[in-house]
Image 1 (cartoon, rainbow, N blue to C red):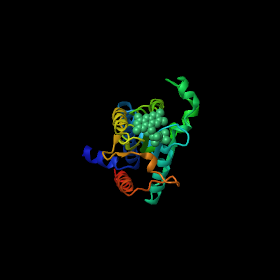
Image 2 (cartoon, helix red, strand yellow):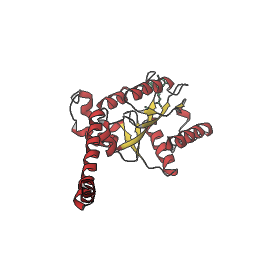
Image 3 (cartoon, helix red, strand yellow):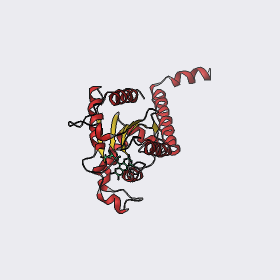
Image 4 (cartoon, rainbow, N blue to C red):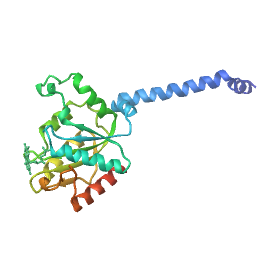
Length: 222
Ligand SMILES: Cc1cc2nc3c(=O)[nH]c(=O)nc-3n(C[C@H](O)[C@H](O)[C@H](O)COP(=O)(O)O)c2cc1C
């Protein structure tokens, strides 16, 4: 009898509201707990479907930026809007070392772009057998783990020499693995870069286009 009464009392609107409240409370508690366990979870909620192309040098008039713009154009033709972040836009103060452990105001707009992005394409020139130092400084300035953890990336290397920055791309893959960024297995290496870009700043060689197309198509479903 008591049970019957209790069952009916439980049907009252007050109790269903209480139920909803308890469910909500549990969800919030689980979310808080996840944040505690994995600080980047909070950042995942801030992510948008933004693809960020990182032009990996601060050298003025770089081939890297031309290739970044080419990728942006080619992705747009496939219906994917991508934004370019050029390392020429890094704040001067970054090099002074004053940023360690602090929030650098001038870096914040870039940090926000990185936090929002859910996937990246890094265009990386070969400098002395590896990737440019400024690219590592950029990674070091980005917040860890919220910037890259559990996100995805495609890598494109290029060089004057005949290896297309194979070694620099491998070095950078190691860094990506450390910061929790998943690297797409198909990495591109464009050698003899001086003969690869036409006057419009576009890649044009048939076999290069074949592989850039393949990489972009795979990236869009990665
Ligand atoms: C500082 C520096 C170091 C370079 N080291 C290499 C190298 O080790 N091997 C190579 O094949 N090309 C090397 N290059 C040539 C670049 O890889 C090539 O010109 C590339 O397209 C430059 O990219 P950027 O125009 O975006 O700076 C170097 C260029 C610079 C500026």
